[in-house]
Length: 71
Image 1 (tube, helix red, strand yellow):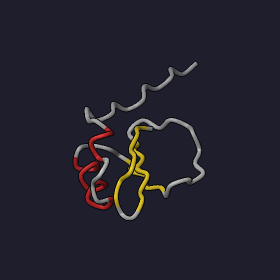
Image 2 (cartoon, rainbow, N blue to C red):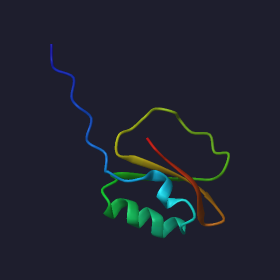
Image 3 (cartoon, rainbow, N blue to C red):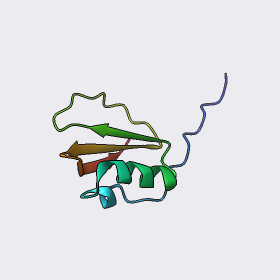
Image 4 (cartoon, one colour):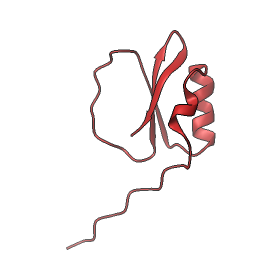
């Protein structure tokens, strides 16, 4: 049987630090800090709940990050 691969390491970064930033600038900064995927969502969006290492989620309201979380 093949070994189970280890998930990639996530950046040592505080997801909450993006709250209040302009969305496009926050996404650019997140990629510079090593996040492999940045997902921008509207408030109340229906999303899948699977956890993906290396992904940062932004809830964007009026062009500003209102909430951010890993996975």
